[in-house]
Length: 451
Ligand SMILES: *Cc1c(COP(=O)(O)O)cnc(C)c1O
Image (cartoon, rainbow, N blue to C red; front, side, top):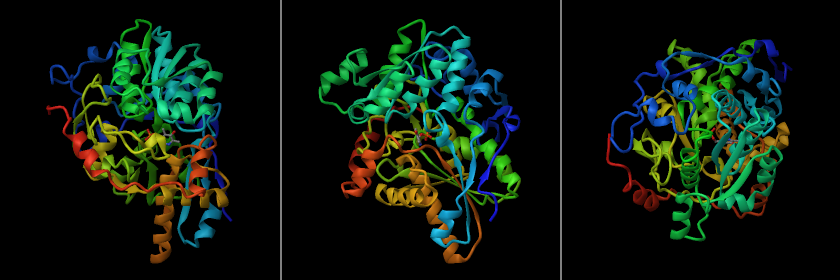
């Protein structure tokens, strides 16, 4: 049996992040200022982001150096292992070779600290005292609370109400790291108060929580906003995942045939797959699959157009696949995948055919998650189970066609705080929502009229 874990030394960690923007077949459409309809300028972002992150957001440089202070902290858990899923392969009886990049080993339990640490660093360097953010299931809020603790910054988290009530442990993680969490919609912001007036029992949504966090940051001088996905600089920071994976595959003497990641805002997928785009452009035949939930099918069913990142319409307009910024996805258990839009970079990669998008139902995902847990041991996050489902489907296809492909997926996080979702799955209470045609149609009526 060949090695199970393929490891890198700390000295082999990537020294620079990879920026895919100059390597895409089309130029990225610029974000637009919603008031003027003109391309947004750096000044449009300065109330909410530090300058260095704005520069990264707009950069066309293919490589951006990782500051030593950031690397020093990432070393607490990085480089993360690339693992050969020998036991899953055997259980499937597939001739395929399956590997997974294990991002669940970070202190917060997912890939999110990769960008949280970088964002906290640049904010600290520019004199910011407090970061404001939103969180859905609580993964991002806990990752940012961890990062701000290490840089001695304050952290305010607007947490989608339904998760705030259902996921007390994520909230306590934030508190342990010194972050302060409020149920969103909250009475702390104008946006929040307006949502509450409209519906005092609102479950909240990521879009609403973003509106609150952006407003908080924009109205306080010493505070800035931090976003856990979607934006270019977040995709950039996450490329450390794929850069490591590329080195690890080399060490194992492998070349990836299929790369798979789940997609909410797009960051773990982008970080994992984008560093292979230069190989693909050089002619290596790599299939890249972005997996999303059927109930929130942004990439497979949404139009590619300009839309807001939040519900109120405070953010610049981004050109992306979107279901409409007022779309409220059904309450599936992969909370991190319930977002109306998707990273403009991932959207463009899909639009230009570099990346294939696929939608899956939640019950088959949990089935895959349980099979993975019972063979490889790790209990995956419901989000990550989407990638596992498709990895297993691809491996079974190899079995049918008697092909020995190299399938690599990103295990974006563990599911230790999601056991209620597993409970619902075991007791057959999970619904496989059909595509919400009417709700999407309604939300698409509210797309901004530009672009
Ligand atoms: C947040 C999250 C996701 C989805 O976010 P992306 O930006 O699409 O990566 C996926 N998996 C886990 C474990 C998460 O916490």
